[in-house]
Amino acid sequence: MPVPAEERPARPQGPAATGAVYVGGLDRCGKTTMSAYLTSHSRIAIPAVGSNMWTYFYRQYGNLAKPKNLDRCLTALLSYKHVTFLKPDPARVRSEFAQGPPTYARLFELFLIHFAEREGKPRWGAQTGLIERYIPELIEAYDDVRIVHMLRDPRDRYLASLELWPEGRGRAGGATARWQYSTKLAERHAARYPAQVLIVRFEDLITDTESTLRLVCSFLREDFEPAMLDMAGAPRLRDRLTAGASVEQEESILKAEHIGRFRGRLPSAELRFMQKRAGGRMKRYQYKLEPVRLAAVDRLHYDLNDWPSQMARLVMWRGAEALQQRFPRRFGRQPGRRMLVEPDE
Image (cartoon, rainbow, N blue to C red; front, side):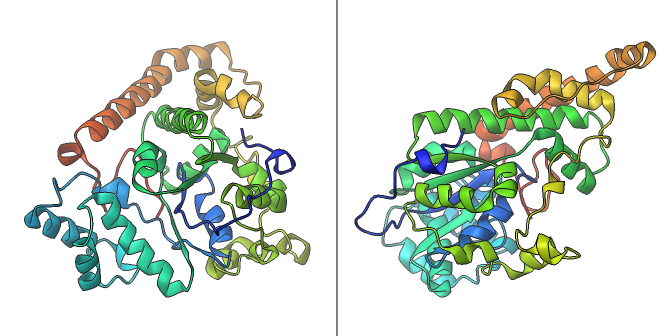
């Protein structure tokens, strides 16, 4: 769990922090919102879209010391809309990449360093869904990297995903598998690398925005800047969040109505499945379980039909994830392809 701001040591004095800033977590968990606040800091540049370079390109083209592999990788990167958003200079990327170790981490870093330079900021960052898969690699590759992991009530996250992708069978099973997988990784890495990984609940960002941002700034070894609260670095997202809000609501940008939206909206059977499979971990993060009552006939139908479908989806998602992680060149994700895990777009 995040350490309250008043209990976390004050930002150490000395040279300004320069390490990379990554914002991770599942889709619909507040990564874009957190990134919008952070990129409103005078020293931090985070693109408005998720970079997803680790998701789509890491280890998929073999050894980048081989010119043919580097050419293939660069061609794919420069064709991806989230990379073109960064307005890269391909010649400069190639030239600087040739001056150091031929690693994927260095290649990804160059695109983001150049973006930060154009923004006039000394510290680069990115948001990427499920970047928590690669935290050991990030820590090995980048000096003083910091990872902010966004966590949200899995029921609200699932509802938000359904509103974007309403079709599909065994949906709650996949959503539960994703949430358990992402949260377990974050917990493991936060325990192993407490100076590099911070878990932040989306609900805290909504209900206590300033204190949460102060906590995050302390973790990043940056001074909190009150201007961050205006989200000036991400005007399009701010306008979207405040559309139709009253003057009083606009002062906080985020609204408490984002919390607990699942009540009365999720099917009781799916809610029951999620809470049975993930209830222990949910309570650990102060997500109270809802009472769910099913009639005997509905419970029988669920046990015979829905439960096997949800479990099959859960197991299938875990198996696909293991294959993608172990054999990225054969089973790796590709931009534009519908996946079991959707990156932030």
